[in-house]
Image (tube, rainbow, N blue to C red; front, top):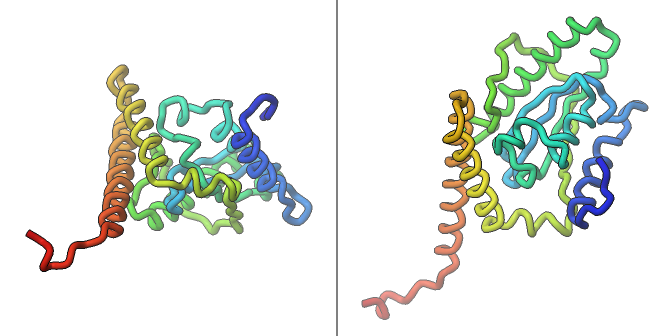
Length: 222
């Protein structure tokens, strides 16, 4: 994840991500956990993407949120610009287990987290284009959550007009991908979820503007 030649804001966000993933818990770095589950949240605190990894949390999250593209980013399912917070569940205990057994528990952990974030989502949906395999749920370990956007960038990126423009562009790109190839029902479901998210944000922006427009006294109205 080289920062050479990167713009200031990109460097600052990457530094925030590194700082979070380099935090040590009982002598172990969060990002150094080989097995883990992660959730990305937008600027409203809405969960937008759930994933799992058995190749280190640091590597997987880095590929999502930097120029090392993943399928979710390449297919315009996930816009890294939308990610304001990360929550991770490091599964350090799995590293001592046999690979097959560890991956089975990892799958159950992802499904448990997936169900948890669906309950917390006001849309009852996230942007994952692929279904998370159904398993039994398990007791999750402690999670760690942090904002990855520095204070001097947060208000700018949180501005609704900026987010509306980004979200509309993402939807247009995703719709183009869908129109050009045979895709899964999951990708079309993601398009619907993105459209719902855009509609809510645009409606909230309009309502906020109306709320700030001074109203004429009744006697002045025609």
